Length: 157
Image (tube, rainbow, N blue to C red):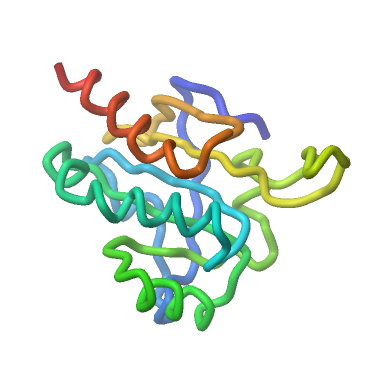
């Protein structure tokens, strides 16, 4: 299933760090940034997560929730959240079903070789549940949270 801007975002329900079920529909009426990343506590993923953390207040002013999704389990997420004081929800997708729906799992280039894995990408879901923007491949994890914030801010003006 391809993610299309202007179309309804695929529904999902995943476990958070405490095993609670979190559904996309729980955030209806707010902007939701759903970002997909390969692995907790790795260099690029840490920079990206800390970027979203450091911009938390700006995102909150724009009534925006950030959700991070990776194949990692609850325990891995708990350690990652604690170590970097991440103030947003991380969700577990060990079977990669949501990642597949969102085009965040598949063939990619890594160090010049084709491989199958998590495609670092982000989807902005608007308050109405429709996809506003889809960043299919995020080239620079560290810069991405700022770029997303800039798009959100521009849309509010």
